[in-house]
Image 1 (cartoon, one colour):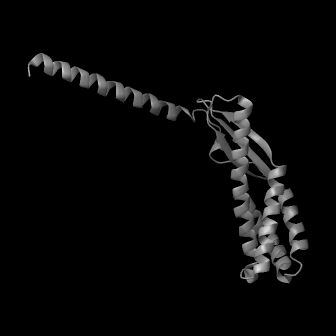
Image 2 (cartoon, one colour):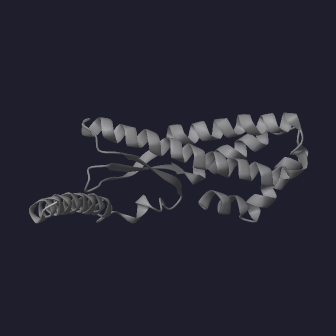
Image 3 (cartoon, rainbow, N blue to C red):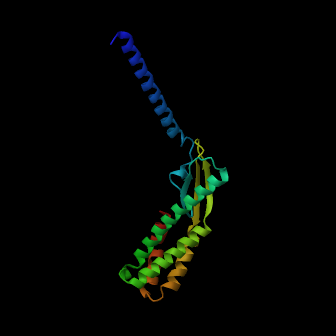
Length: 184
């Protein structure tokens, strides 16, 4: 192998290496810029007196409305999961004595489904942000006061056969445990 061939091969290797490195830097730059100027609610969805969650729709060739609607649906699905966990936790607190009762567990499931469904149906878009990469972020929120009212109604009507539940519910409500669960 002569020196010209060796220099030619070295030049080609340097060009290939240099091009792949700059491509990687451009991709890293795009990731970094995604959250430049992003509002704090994107990472910590909080709104006073509401339970909130965020959904994202990645930049597509779709129209803004289609992309926004997709982000809303994702936010509602995330909110439903969060509500489901919170409501199950509340029923676990107030129904410790009945946790092995199949009828009680069925009533919890029915109550949970109703509460989550109502909260999602009554939820609203409270924030919207379009990132530097044209991804759309949406925060959907559900009113805690309304959820507490619905929860009280369900405890009073659906759990009449479980006498201790209503007393435990009132106790946890007075102690602030229900508010703590819903606000965290």
